[in-house]
Amino acid sequence: MIRAVLLLAMLTVASAVWSDTDTDTELTDPALNQRYSTLIREIRCPLCKNESIADSGAPIAADLRREVRRKLVDGASDAEIKDFLVQRYGDFILYRPRFTPETWALWLGPFVLLGVGGFVFWRVLRARRGQTLDEPFDEDAEA
Amino acid sequence: MWRYAIPLVLLGVIGAFFYRGLSLDPNDVPSALLNRSIPEFSLPALGDPSRQVGSQDLKGKVALLNVWGTWCVECRHEHGFLLQLARAGVPIYGFNLKDDRASSLDWLATLGNPYVTSAFDEDGTVAIDWGVTAAPETFLIGRDGTVLFKHISPMTAAVWQRDFVPLLERECKGTADCPFLAAAGGQ
Image (cartoon, rainbow over the protein chains, first blue to last red):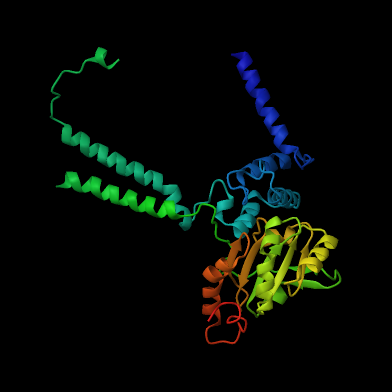
């Protein structure tokens, strides 16, 4: 168990170091560095669409990382940086799109579907109430 | 009756979603700038670093802005068609992205220069304001300085006819702002 936990911890550290070294050096301020690593994992590379800009090797990903760093050092908030990118690349650039009228369907759709499913389930259960099974349920047969 | 109606309606709804969803191209992400004003910028000109090219040059006329670089293979592919458009009189502004000045000028001297002028964005900072992801990309800019369309990947005659000409015809209807339209394949 302990070995497994240690291995997992080592793997986590290894991947973090790996993805930070490609073009960038660590920011001197650890808090800023932490925000930087979180941000670049939440920003999608607009060219290679299924990678974050932390993972992508595309030139545009490097440019966007540089822009994010520059803004962090200049004192911009996370929200300001995300706004900056959404204005230029659209909601698509965020792996967690914001809750706006355009993304309502995206955020609420699953809950609507869950509600519809629950309603159907409830209807089916209610229709079956009072009905008896033809045969008694046999637990052993099920296993 | 209900028993049969619900699954049928559901099938219809799911079918409609699939029909729409499967005909969409997931790579086709429209520009966030669409129908918005072009970003303000000013960059040194490729041919003459002492001169500036910027949003002021693009406003008040119908024009194309073409993002290119000598490192971009597909740009070479579309170059011939850009020259053809330029010969028809279409004003094309170049946006030279993350490139080397000498090789860019050499490229234009060898292959021909379709651009009115080219802006030189050495580190790609202004390109981010335009929402550029790579080259080649081509923006269609309207008279009032709004982005009417953005095409990602090489320009071809087919793309021009399908996407650009109808927008240009609408933009220039009853005006003399697109004198090139007839020569470039429009009405």
